[in-house]
Image (cartoon, rainbow, N blue to C red):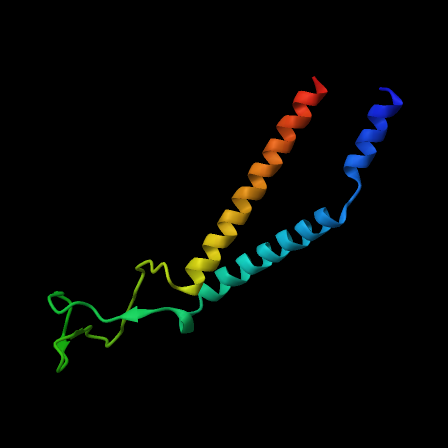
Length: 116
């Protein structure tokens, strides 16, 4: 290797202010993603619904015709709602992770091509 190649490698490895901001942002997105995942599993934040009237497990009917389970329990509503905060945060995190991964793959390919 010559001196210029060595100098270029050292300059590429220096941490610039832009890289530092991106790194802090990436770590923040990771922490946000983990926190969102944990919060989403809390029973207090789950959305519930009562089973439909024509469900065979319904024991009683309320005045409005909604069926109740024999135990009085409710079922977790697993329908995806695109306007909920958890869904929006998770989508933003996935987009961030995907773009960062793609950027790293592109850099790796460029370095591999330069080395040849």
